Length: 394
Image (cartoon, rainbow, N blue to C red; front, side, top):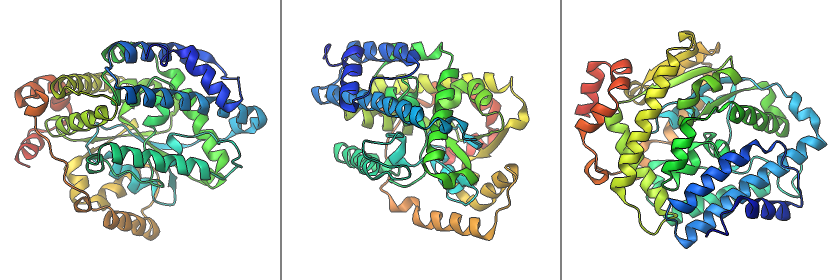
């Protein structure tokens, strides 16, 4: 494994496969090396997991090689005017996927699609505006996920053409939560906490510019982004996209965190022979407590008009008015066409069409008392007493 997960080996292999050598600014090599060290020393990957991580990193480097080459041949890409309307930054399991898909499925807005978040740069032989190979690769990722652990479909709706969060793109700069989602990487996570993420958001803008250049219909639309990975890097996000509305869906962590722990253990099981649910669960809970505490502190330093707060229960109970309020904040009217698109999505994606996602606090070594302590700052700041009681009774 030591040989397979070395940056020099992986870079050489990516260059060989792409027949390209220019990776552009190599700032990403430091986070890559920190990640690889953690994968080698802490993750306890299975043999199959080593191969998966190796291919994931080679694919990320390949995307970068192909992107750099495409921009060199088409420098006008960097002149694309990207307009980010809103960024949903909520904790996982708060209805954030639902909200992004409701918004991005309407005419004024667009979002990344599943097939392009893992392969944002054109593959060999693909022409501008065509993405057959990337769509096939995206479907294979879905198939591999579900085959590896069928329970995953209960925790997240994987759809090839659906609006998707940019977390996988951020992970390909080796400074996002995607990489820690598949393995236990405490050293890497601790290192991430102290880093300036400004370069990450500059790279994200470039990816959006490419996607807009590749599909020119997006030029008339504004982007709806979404990732909980933005929580601890709020200031860098706001600097890069100064006009974006930051949307936060609020739900009691006593409800969301056990679900996140369940998802993490399912993902870890794809790459590890043994997964200690208690270790992963407690680490995940502490990780998100830190993220929300960091978010709370950063938000206090930013203009309040940059934010739109939304209650999870209200969104789930009656989505149309909640979506309408977001439209209004974004200077758009909820037209009949947009309303129809929202209703069609709601009907096609009823929660009862997917299996139940079952879990408990105890299986992850967690308790209500412990979560109340760890998330006290966030709960006191953003959840009223009635909301907390309502969640406890649900």
